[in-house]
Image 1: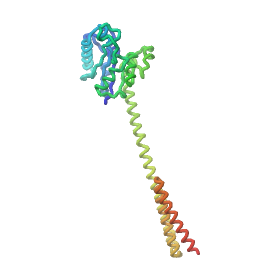
Image 2: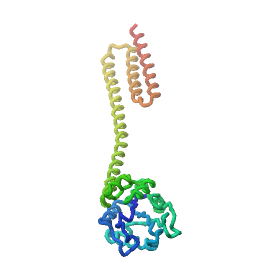
Image 3: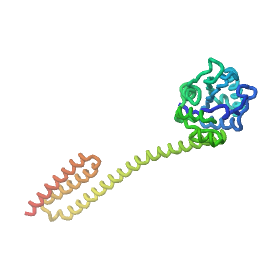
Length: 292
């Protein structure tokens, strides 16, 4: 599933004025096309979600809305050099205070409701958790918040900014795009860091365990070597029983070394330790008899 940028139309991409239903008079806000190109290059799919209550109020028709969107796409694609820079347009022609009966009512697509956004996510298989809404009014922000999007209000009006309570605010669409891209880069860096942190302890722990086991083995063999050397020095003056006891002593040391190598398995450690203790007990008994 892909991330998307949901864009309000009037006041965000085009000036919010009385020419909203006249295709021939459509103009883009300054820097809009360049901003959209940056979003597309960053891997976002672009969707317009706009209230068009002017249809319900009798100012223009749905055909006019479609013609405006066709003109808007033409202008944007000419400036971005892309095809279908904006992938889809969703609009709501309904308004509870309209004068055209079939459009005079509330509708789940009308912002601040989130109907257009959730419908687009379903139609286009979009990942809302990684998506954003950019608009110029508190109702845009409310719709985005309801849909689970991160939101940016494009406005210089402090009262509007306070009323909207968006995640971020920007003076222009270009500034809003900077916020989106900066957040994306920070998220990517955080994920990479988390993966490194998650991998490092496992590697470090494995290395420490291997070094600890190797050190135990070295100590055990060192002790065994010293015992063998001592045994050779005393062999000429030792009795047969004492020589046997010394051999058992070496076996006890080796068995205890094996026990140390099994510290991670408590049951195995206990078994090997008990075996070493029994061999040591036999060794002590033989030495006592030899002394007598």
